[in-house]
Structures are given as structure tokens and as C-alpha cells.
Length: 268
Image 1 (cartoon, one colour):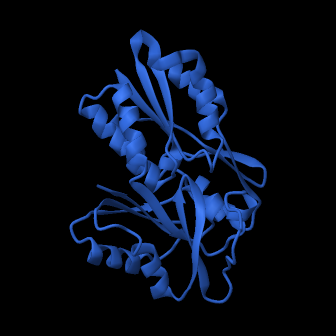
Image 2 (image 1 turned 60 degrees about the vertical axis):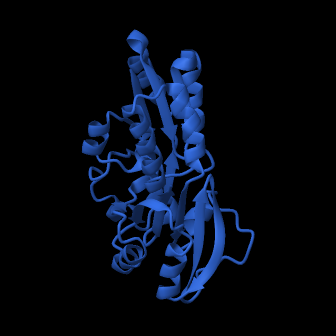
């Protein structure tokens, strides 16, 4: 039996994870030095109220957080496929790899190259292959190809959270002055695309890079942001694709700040 393990940054609710047979490893975030364990979507309480005006950090899970699950799941010949958020954004992948070492080929660890909606899409693809009866080797091989079909485009209100966390290296004139906001992409690492001024151009910059072959879409936000116009633009361009609306959760919020909006998608 193969069991999929991922981290809470994927944004699964407990019901979604249970229905897919997925095990979740909690990531940690710190508010003024006090550590909190990220829970499945919808179970993190009023974290935004607690975060405002405070010193924020995140912390990767220790290898033990993974190894105890791996040990449980590999008993009686079980196998594990562990999929983590991008190694460029967190040391979570490294912790999982270290934890997997004693288990040999029974545990495979895959770096998704993405987070939140993108990670959710990536893990769902693995679930579909597992349901289809593919072996662990076959699933891992296919995931490498699938990774290239997933991308995220997003924008933030402030660059400070990304810069403080070391997730963005400023190599060009990136700014949030006046009504200008940056457009960024995430595919393995975060990259600056352009500065955009005005609401409509900002929405266009989120939607226009998406290929016509897009087949699933996650519209993500951090905090109390009105994403109605982005959703309308997505629906107009992809009328037959369901748009999943998601709040990103506390760990991702630490790094993108309130007011961030992003679109994760997978193409055929």
C-alpha cells in the first residue's frame, strides 16, 4: 500500500486530506517568538489578528516529524510518497529527505517546486495516479513531467515579508510605490516579472500568462481581499474550468503578507 504525505502549506482541509488518504505534517510559524503549529485549512483560528504588527517567522519541521509517520506507514511492507513545498522556499524538503534515509526505497521524497494551490494541484495529480493503480516508481517518474505543467503567478502589497524571509532576491527595480505592485511567479523559486500600475493591469498580469490548455485553477488570497474581479476575469477566459478559492494559511501569509493574491494552475 502506498500512502501520500505532504505538509500543511498545501492548504488541504482535514476532510479533503482524509478523503484522499493523505497524511499531513504540520509546519510551524512564530509570532513574537511564540511557536504555533499550522493546522489543516479552516482550523487555524484568528491567526491574522495575532500576526498584525508582530515579528513573524516560520520554522521547518524537524526530521522526526516525518520519520515517525514514515515508520508507521512502512510497517507491514507499506510505501510512502512524501511531497513537500519547494526546497527553494523552505528546509522542509531537506528534513523529509533526512528522515527518509533509513527507509531506503520504501519512502520517496519529491520536491514539488511550488506551494499552497500549486502544491495542492501537484499532490492531487499523485493521488489520481495512485487511484489509477500506478507503482511508486511510475508515479515519481510522472511527477517530474507534471511539475513543468504547474505554475503560480501572484502579487503582493509589500515586498518586505518576502525580503525578510530571504525568499526573494531583488535583482531589478521591484517596488510597491504609489499604485505600483510587483507581479511574481513561482516555479521552483520566486521570480520577479514586472511592476504593474493600476487594478485592471494587475488583474490582466495575473491571468494573461496562463495557457489555453489550463485545466485546473486555484485563486488564492491572504487576508480580507476582494478577489471578485480576478475570479470574473478567470471565468471569462476559462469558462469551463472550475476555480477553487483558497485562503493561503498562516505559514504562507508570513512570507507574502496580507493583501497578496495569486493564481496557481496546471495545464494539459
